[in-house]
Image (cartoon, rainbow, N blue to C red):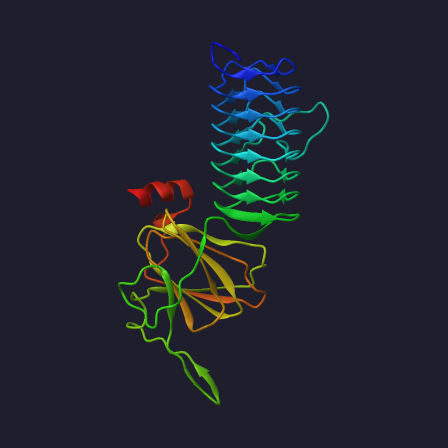
Length: 304
């Protein structure tokens, strides 16, 4: 135990950094270089290497066989499984170094499964779950569960299933499913939407989303003022609705189902079927200033 800072270094471990928080443990055959900044109560298992330009938050776990290179930023409560591979140079050559290494950010509470590979410059959102052996080539949204090579979204953590749809929409309903009226007979089905009247707002803009590869994610933003109403005309799509505190997932797989999203709602759509056509009614014309594209900024605004 180091009495001056109250962190532990095993007699066969090396910790050259003095910027180490209380309660942190560096175990045998691990090496921490002098420039690294490490938080409190971090557990650095055997055979771990931590380079200089590294920032590690509080209560992080680094399992055996992990190398944390320059440019890596780990938030609080991050779990890094055994033999996770970080990279920081997209085009590495021996004895040739970039002027600045790519910055890779793993946000608070994220977990990286054993053997995952994290490419340079990606951002993995808070409480995301990276499956064992996944190869992460693009940013991962907050709370997303990703698997495979390249990693694709398979679901979301801490996300409840959507509620049953309401019978009719109302201007006072919160985010959730609405059952639209449908007229059916032997000739087929008719789904009328009267404007104004049948939606929770008077739409000012309509757009269609189609031809989305199933591994791709749409949305990932909130609106300050704009409300939206989503209907999947054909196929199916999964939709995450997030108010900054709670998240729910809704599956739109019936054109008589509509999903209302009030303003200040973080929305993400994923798992599109190949034939999916999503229509979105919006209460406002397009305005880039109305978008909130950073989830942490959204959480702060939503909480206030």
